[in-house]
Image 1 (tube, rainbow, N blue to C red):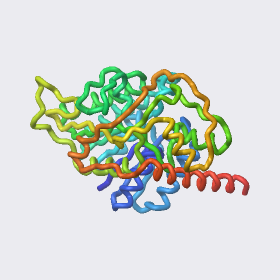
Image 2: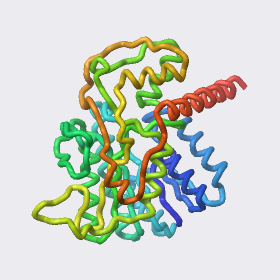
Image 3: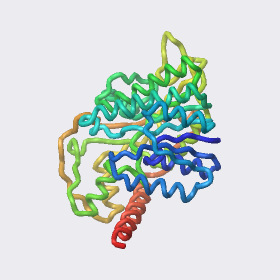
Image 4: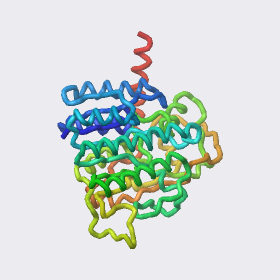
Amino acid sequence: MKILVTGVAGFIGFHVARALLARGDSVLGVDNLNDYYDVRLKRDRLATLAATGVSKLEVVELDIADAAALRTLLAKSEIEAVVHLAAQAGVRYSLENPHAYTHSNVNGFLAVLEACRQHPVEHLVYASSSSVYGLNAHMPFSVHDNVDHPVSLYAATKKANELMAHSYSHLYGMPTTGLRFFTVYGPWGRPDMAYFLFTRAILEGRPIKVFNGGEMARDFTYIDDIVEGVVRVLDRPAVSDPAWSPTAPDPGSSCAPYRVFNIGNNQPVRLLEFITTIEAVLGREAVKDFQPMQPGDVTATCADIDALGAWTGYRPATPLAEGMARFVAWYRDYYEQREENSRK
């Protein structure tokens, strides 16, 4: 297949594109390479992709909110499916820069939907987030639950994406599948994520910030498990649910070709246990700076992945200690090489 991957220089986008190239697909990657975090890391991801998939990889630097440019790109590219992962990420950053989120996550997503409507594709898979569950305290989080109480603008934009996708599935018969990602970690990860920040701080002998007194839990999911789930979903386009009823509407499906799935690990880990795991891998003890709860944050996440398992056979398989060991090995190697190159 020829597949458009937006956000191809991002953490998940890079890994998904690499997996698609490895199985023989052609990838058209799009990214605006913004400076929300280390642009050099993004460029190094692209260089790694180019080294493994030159003949079947094309990368275009483009802002997905540029609707005309995106339509033109799809018109000439004969794209068969889209994996839309480009977005302005980060819960806390959305409190400081809200317009960046409406630009990328709302206007950008509308541009993707319109491009797919005008140049129809077999399937649009897009990134939602566990953040949509907001104030919902029913565990594990289920796609059959109501998600109308977000606690950050980031979460609100992701919920908006799901609503926008449904309207296009209903109006135009466009198969769309939203994936609610739960805390993803692993090599080539995002430097603003806790596991990355903790690793860097511990190695540098700096304190780590532990929010809510450590009374938090996250459904950490290793990147390889995530990628397997994304590819499995891509290969099975959404269809109308014959059991769906307008008198008792299930939020996770529809009479339109629309699906929403959790993609996580279903094994939440307490924050202090997570820190202990990192300490064990690094062979160093963290200096902990206990902080109050942050605005826009939630105390716990846990993914009910039964629906995704039933749909695709998805089952995560990477234990946290193993996944963190792989991340730390990558981290040490990558930044040692960067340091060595900067001295040359």
